[in-house]
Length: 113
Image (cartoon, rainbow, N blue to C red; front, side, top):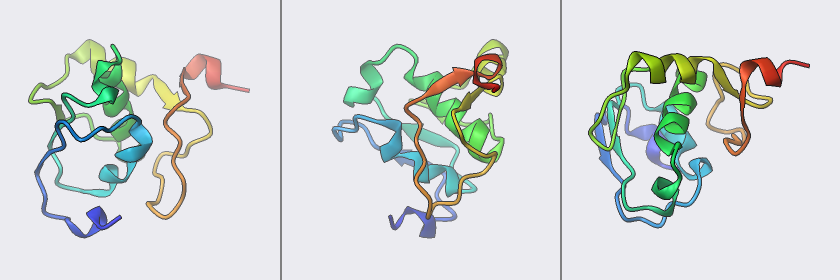
């Protein structure tokens, strides 16, 4: 994707773009200044915990919890939940040239071998 060249991008509106999976937006974790991402009105946003999964994706990839999703921040409880959840088989930072599967979120305790 060309997103990795947008290193000064702070806000991104992806509303109503038929985004169905976090895999479609995983590359956004490579944007160091991205602070506000809007994913409302996408099929992905119909899932009840999608905001937590976006936070988890950023927490896992670049240890960031300061992002806004759909203009809203996260409570300490939500941040703790994201911190204690990881993507199965992932490393703390996933380079953008490797596949990043965000479909299998597991609580850390369940993900341990």
